[in-house]
Length: 62
Image (cartoon, rainbow, N blue to C red; front, side, top):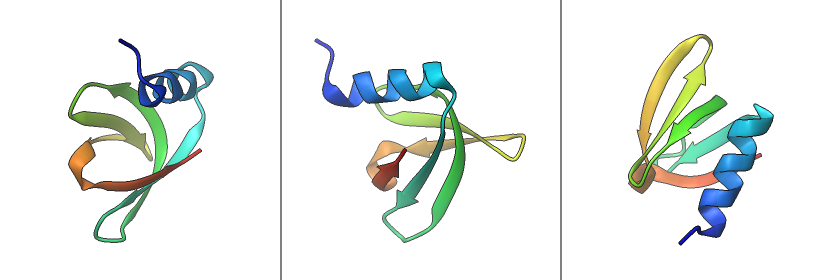
């Protein structure tokens, strides 16, 4: 079953849009989402890859 979350992430990945991910601690991570799985998001930030656990995310702004 595909969720709304999966659809949004897939659209963002295909369009290569820049997103801002706000973490629960208030940190902002801005970059391009490369891949998503059940528990994590892989994002390219200034040429470096960061793996973010979904449980640490407050908001994803497209």
